[in-house]
Image 1 (spheres, one colour):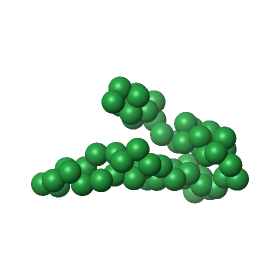
Image 2: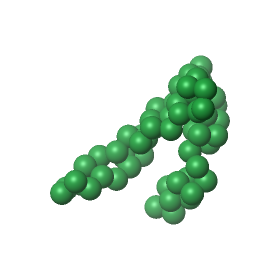
Image 3: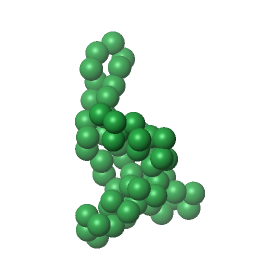
Length: 60
């Protein structure tokens, strides 16, 4: 899944892997841009991914 801010200046890509018959699950890997370090990447991730989706990740 791709999450982009409304100005198209920041994004987070959530990498998924196929588990069969068209089903996918998160691989746990994410790419955030534009950032210079892990702290900025986490901030972008937190700001762009909706709370409801983040709660799904924390429950697994």
